[in-house]
Amino acid sequence: MVDNTFFELSSIVQSNLLSLSDTKTGVSLEEFGIIIDTVCNSLAKIPSTDESQNAIKQLEGKLGPQRISELYTSLSKFIIQAASQNISSSQLESKLKTFNWSSEKIDRLMKVFLVNQSKIQAVLRLYGSSPPKLVDVNWRLDYRLETNTRGPVHELMYIIELILEDKGRREPLTFTASHAELEDLVNTLKDACHSVKRVALV
Image (cartoon, rainbow, N blue to C red; front, side):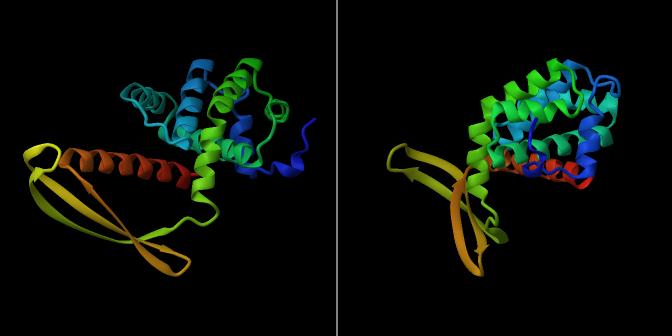
């Protein structure tokens, strides 16, 4: 048996995970896999595809946005806990069995988690316990006529300066981006906002 003293979950998270047992849920193995893939990819900072986004939207239409948000958030918290505690595969399996899941669902989560475990742990180490906070943003638009390597380019270039505060000290982080690159960044931030909304609903 797994020692639950090192793996504490809130009652809400435990309730949501217990609801995924075969006798209490309408979530099929395929749908469960879609949610697990989405959660692990998000935590491992793997960009989502149009196919995966469409699959989640279809699930929201079937189960409801509230239900998907609860499952997404609870599974995220569980996986973060498992990754941060660096539990073994046998400990993970023992813990999952306490949720009364089918062996197929347990195997699916373990397979996806173990593939992404090192990436998720790297992300957690990067953020640490208290990551820098974004406190201000400055930007300006520049027109680039040419570059040393490409010659004449005649393109617009955004110069973005993020002001980060870490332990009372402010430091700028500056980067440049084309219009297309900036649009991609905005879409990524929108995805992050949607994830925060999911967490806030639980």
